[in-house]
Image (cartoon, rainbow over all chains, first blue to last red; front, side):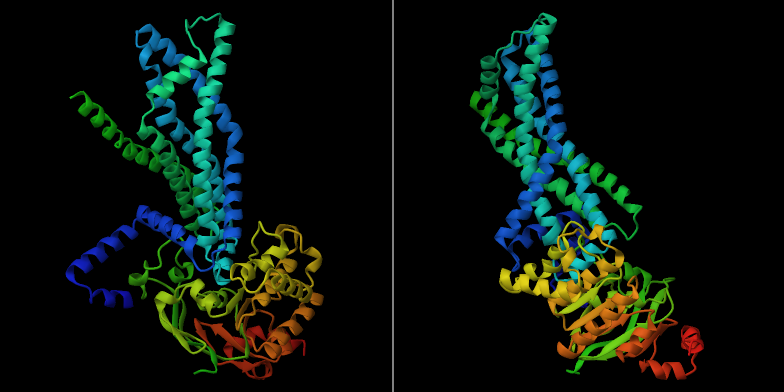
Length: 290
Length: 271
C-alpha cells in the first residue's frame, strides 16, 4: 500500500515506466530476468569472500561438467560421425566438395553443437539443480538460510549461475572438438570396415583446413557468447523453478520437468535471436561483392 | 518502547500470507495484494503481543492454531495481511518485513525440523552464518563453533552429515547454530519435540543461561507446558485466532478459562 502511495509522487512518464516494470515483473520471464540480475548483483554484496566464492563456483563448474561429460562425449562422437559421413558423401555426390568446411562449421560449431550441449546440460545438470534447491525449499533449508541472514540468491543461485555458465562453455568446446575429432576417427574406422562403401575421401588435413577456412570472426565470438548465454538461461531457469516450489514434495518433480522444458524453449528462442547477428556477416559479404 | 524486544499490534494473517513470497521473486511484488481478499480465511486475527527485552515467553495452543505461523511472521518468512510489528522499538514497514532484514536485527529462528543444510557437515552448519557474516577470524569462529557444539553436546558428530543424525540430534545442532550467532531475540519452534527426557533436561538450563547471561529474549512455541513452568516464564495462548494476555503457569493452572480447560486437564489430573 505504501509503495502504491509513493508511485503517485512520480511524473506521468515515471508512472508509465513503473507500470511497465511491474507488468514485466509479474510475468515469469520477467521474474527470471530479475533473478539473473539479482544473482549477478549479489557478487558485489558486502558479504563477498573471494576464496569462498571461488570455491563454490569451481565446485559447481566441476559438478555440472563431470556429471554430464560421459554422455556428452558419446553423443558428440556419434553426432560427429553422422554429420561427417552425411556431409562428405552427399556434397561429394552433388559436386559441392568446397562447401564441406562451411557446412561443418554451421552444423557442428555454430548451431547443433551449442544447442545439443545446452539440451544435455538442461536435462542432466539443470534438472539436478532444480531438485537440489527444491529439496532445500521443502525442508525449510532456504528459509533457514534467510533467517540466518544468508542471502539464498547469493549462496545458492549465484554459484550455480556462474559455475553452470562456465561449465556450459567448456562442455560446448569439448562437444564440438569431440564431434570433429572423434567423429573423424569413427568415420575412418567405418570407412575401413565397410571398404569405403560410402565412397568418402577423407583426410585430417583436408577436414581441418576446410573447417578453419570456413570460420569467420563472428563464429569465434559466438563460440564464447552462445554457451555462456545458454548456461545463464539453464541455471537461472532451474533455480527460479526450484525456488517457486510450494511446500509440497509432489511439486518437486513437476518443477524439474518444467525447468527442463522451459530451458529447451528459452534456448531455442535465444538461438534464433543470436542467429540474427549472422545477418551482419551476410550483409558484409554482400557489400564486399557489390 | 526501548525496553521492548517485540511488539505486535493488530496482526492479521491469512493462509495466502503464510505461504509468503518466494525468494526468487522481486521484493517489490506483492505489496498491492496486501489486505484480506474477498472469501479469504484468516489464520490469525487482531493479535497483539508485547515481549520485554530479556524476557522468555512461551506460546501455547492446540495444533493448527497458527503458533508456528506467528513465529514465521516475526522472522519475516510470512507476510501479514495487516498489522504493525516493532522489533527492539523499531517499526518494520511491510516492504522491509523480509527474513534477511529481520536477521540483520539479530533475530534467530530455530525450526521445528532443525532445517540443517543437508550438504554441509555438522561443524560447517554451525559455522555457516559466522563465516558468511565474517564474525571473527577463522580461529575465533572455530572456537565459537566448538563452544556451541560442546554446549549442545554434538561435537562428537561434528564431521557427520545431517541425514545421519536423529531428529533430536538435528534439533540440537540447529540450536547450537542459532546460539553461535548470539541473537538478541531467539524464536524457537517446538524445541523439546523429539528430544528424550535427558536432552530435554539439558536444554532447559541452556535456554535459561541464554536469558540470564546473554540477556537474550526468547519466544518459544511449544506444546510442552511443563517447560514454561520449569523456565518460570509467562505463557500466552493462541486460540480462536487471537493471543491471550500472558500469565504464569500457576495462574493458568488455577484459573478456569475455556482456552486452557482442555490443555491443562491432564496436568490438573496428575496433580
